[in-house]
Image 1 (cartoon, helix red, strand yellow):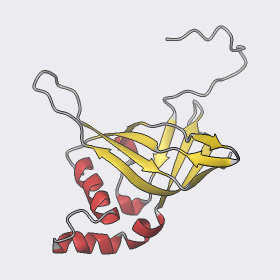
Image 2 (tube, one colour):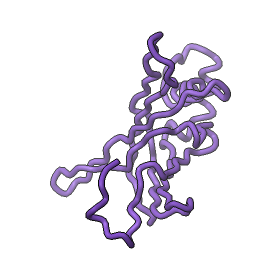
Image 3 (tube, helix red, strand yellow):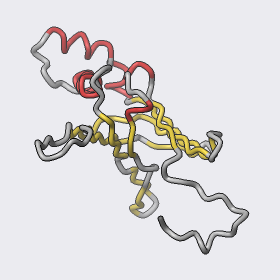
Image 4 (cartoon, one colour):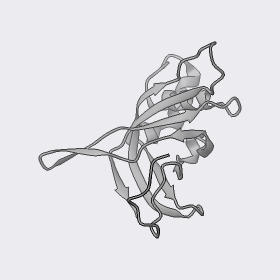
Amino acid sequence: MKSMVKVPSHIEPKKTNRWLGRFPVKLGIQEWWQSETSRPSVSFDGEKVIYHPITFKLRDAIGPSSAQCINRLMIGMTNHLSDFEQSNMIRGEFKEERENGFDYELELLDPTGHVIESWLVVGCKLVSIDYGKLSMDNDEMCEITMALQPKYFIQQY
């Protein structure tokens, strides 16, 4: 644990383990699947703002299956497996998200669970998905890593 000597005792610092990520219900991504993320980041090219991808680590649950949900999102937002009828049905369901992306909300919480910081990440599109490696040498939980590219974001408070 890092020392908090420099933080005055009457100040409560924000903690990296107090947050919730909220995806649209339609995507089926459960809040409790999320184990790691980052707040939005940018860089600048002169006066131009460059929005960086946001990376997520998700716990891969058996039921409902995290991997199936993320695979469905991938099919819905890309031309992956376009020769299969089921894939075309899924793409039809995700037409708006494929064209405009989807919005994601990130909330930081205080010790009592009240929202103290809120980000609206707008127009997210898939950049990458890594379904993770497997090993017979450990008993760790499977994880899925996913990166989303936002159009922009707004810090609401």
